[in-house]
Image 1 (tube, helix red, strand yellow):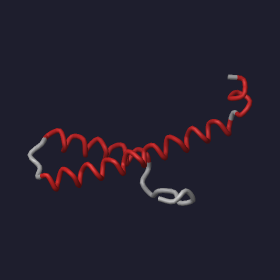
Image 2 (tube, rainbow, N blue to C red; image 1 turned 60 degrees about the vertical axis):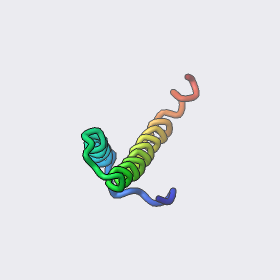
Image 3 (tube, rainbow, N blue to C red; image 1 turned 45 degrees about the vertical axis):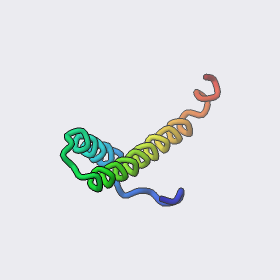
Image 4 (tube, rainbow, N blue to C red; image 1 turned 90 degrees about the vertical axis):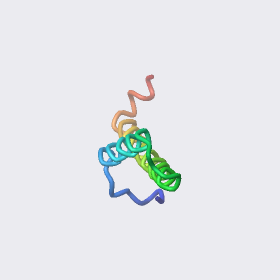
Length: 71
């Protein structure tokens, strides 16, 4: 994902899918290839969630620049 491109998946969607990936991995019974594919998807979803959290932090900082300077 480039820095100018916004993802089409929302934070909530990514978080829910990530929770599902974790549940599947914890349940076990997967082949090595299936586990690796899920792990890679989980890493991608974690980066996506972090992107949305970073954007939210930036927006909060921009909305209250005086409060950030006083802290």
